[in-house]
Image 1: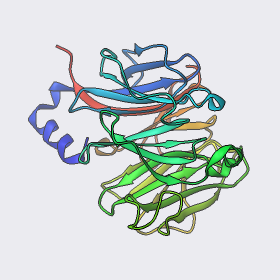
Image 2: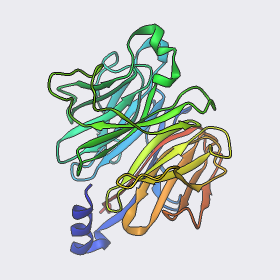
Image 3: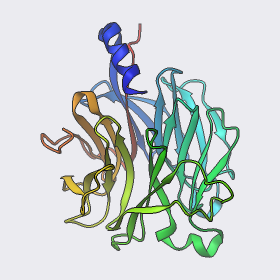
Image 4: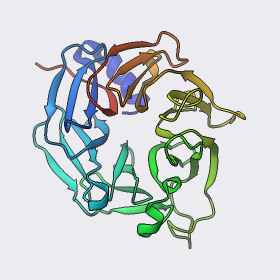
Length: 309
């Protein structure tokens, strides 16, 4: 939901809405909903096929999530359900995307965008799963898929400059991770596999994973699950005045994966593979681990949803 829509809804009566986190538990194949302090936890979806990324469409009362599947079986998929987990539906069937990871919503364009890891692609489709497109193709075929520097994992969209950002994580702890950016649309006369507008935003990163953009302050945040001191962290950098090195704002994660921002309330939420959920201010201060040993946690989304009546 856009900042303008959120502000409008707050002004119309904040008491009608409640702040919720939606969290994916990879190993158990579950989706949980909870308050932002971890209370009132509910399991709303079960039997997911290795879920990784999640996004909330508050206006339509939907959640969308990716199922990575088993990489060598090419059986990844994308599903949709109501905010309470009911009316579950597959919108991108197995075989149409290989290993889908982080997913984001472009509400104004009515599009879903996601990274496809072993597929080595950045993809998008309409909200009903139609008009499937590949925007970035970093590699192609089985031989390329073994090169982890080509694996696309996390992404974010800057609608103001019409740019897309995505991470290619590289091998575990190898320091070969990169974050790229390019125009959202493929330049005329070019293809997803051969386009000349791609630039490296940051290179030589330990192992960058999920991205999240603070649209108001024009700052990109991302998790990094590589080795300390630069890995196991949350990093940030201005997208308009890119610094020489990103700023590390949170440390001592246990393989950080998911990240969600609540910019109006100056806070972030982060998950890691050891099963912890953290909260902190956007500058990293006030860090608090409010849930731990919750299984292998991947994606996380923050949303202000209507209170149950």
